[in-house]
Image 1 (cartoon, rainbow, N blue to C red):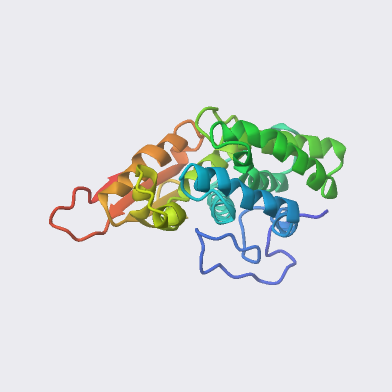
Image 2 (cartoon, rainbow, N blue to C red):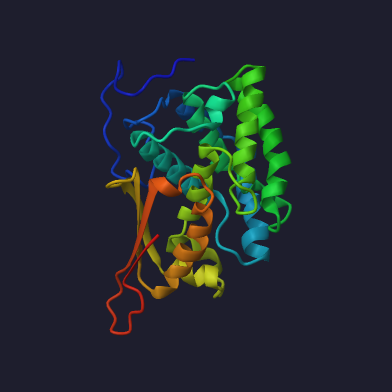
Amino acid sequence: MSDGHAGTDEPARTESSEAGREYDPTAAHSFPDERVNEVLDLIETDEEIEAYLEAQNVNAVTRKGYNDHGPKHIKIVRHRALCLYDLLKRGGVEFNGASENGLEEADEAVIIALAATLHDIGHVVHRDDHAYYSIPLASDLLDRVLPGFYDIADAVRVKGEVLHAILCHHTEETPLTTEAGVVRIADALDMERGRSRIPYEKGGRGINTLSSQAIRSVNLREGDGRPVLVEIEMTDAAGVYQVDELLKAKVVGSRLEDHLRIVAVNTHEDDDQLVERIEL
């Protein structure tokens, strides 16, 4: 399977209008993208994976009242992860997961995309400790999906890297690879008000729901001095919880602390405004 950087012998590709928010397979990227695009074609239409993504919202939202952890959350996390990865690659950041396991550069994005897709399926067992329940469930899915793209040895290596990133998306385990760090941070970058739509409409008013309602937009851009600038627009001081507690906790120990600049601005015009701007 060949993998080359876009723009060599392929038709010219344009920048996505949602650059920094949505991964566009047809756009030019800073990494070999053919392999991950083929994997995405499969996992985005896989009936079993889709069933898991729907089912994992029951314990999280219906029974526990947490923010959305279903298909919409997964799609956002996968898009943000690949956009973050693209910016980091453009900025010259080195990734160690695939390379240290004897895999190719093209496999870095595959690891990130698969881990971002499957990181929350453990919710079908229980919200508590869901990262650990995700491991055996994701393992079974990977055993079915990966042989379509890899020989036995490489499938085992990719599987191990994906499972590592899944386990480390929560804060209990420390990422040992840059790929895992990307997934960990991308999970926290789904903080916009749409994330809390379901529990908010059902009357949920916990800090996760209220703080998410305060986040208007999250954008990833090429930074000045650092590879990535994360711009967060919030309309209420409650959004500080999403930034200073949830996102900051995911960034610490991610292996990417020195490559990100995170700026949050409160755009709500109010004489009683408590927070105008915070920077991590």
